[in-house]
Length: 307
Image (cartoon, rainbow, N blue to C red):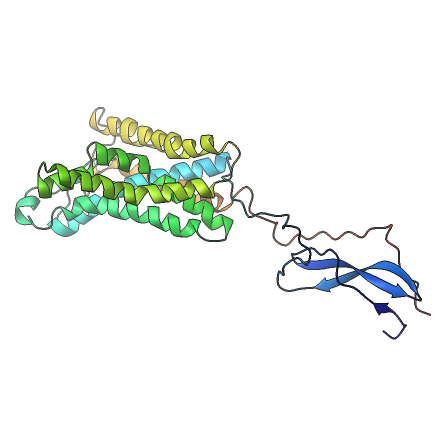
């Protein structure tokens, strides 16, 4: 340079994000010294040394009351939307409203006789639109590099309550009803259906396991795979269902839907809308955006001032 300063060597240790601060070897008037060199970078570049990056992009489910309540509302909406899909598809096919509660639906009277070739689509609509489709949307989100998107992907997968789909395949549910409708008691058809259900549910669950990096990972996984979904099902599908069918609380209907169901759907929608941002905020997702600390070592030798 103009002052006779001659630099030699490469950058020794640089941070890899935002403003890069390095130490360069400098030759000043025949003496070696170290002085700070600041490089402003707009893009993240690889570290020049061989050490691994200090920050990982691991996604952890935030076990806060806001996240848990948001997840609870999402799970309730997914379950109620499953039955709503049955109900709405029945209206489109039959031309009239049937009846639905939290975990039961029936088509309008005479629909099966009038539409024998299409009434079964109402049964297919529930699991197809609000179980299997969200499961694989969750898979797409879990494959994204953004930890917030992956958190919502995991939340979406567990909110569909896949354990109930597996139970339905080996017990009784929409899938078994459809196999019985088309194939009767054909054992081969039932086993093919079971394999298809497992093929649709297990890959998202396996990817969710790989995506979660919480401490005590097995316990956290079981909490969202079994614990919270079963709690949602118990409150919505058993307690509130019993209030309608046994105590006849808010059992009058609008378009075939009891007021109790409409009230629960409204509350779950309000809760989810208010707290949904917490479903995109993992507890550990890499470096905090927009916060960079710069420190200078006071013991570092400095070059003399220009004369």
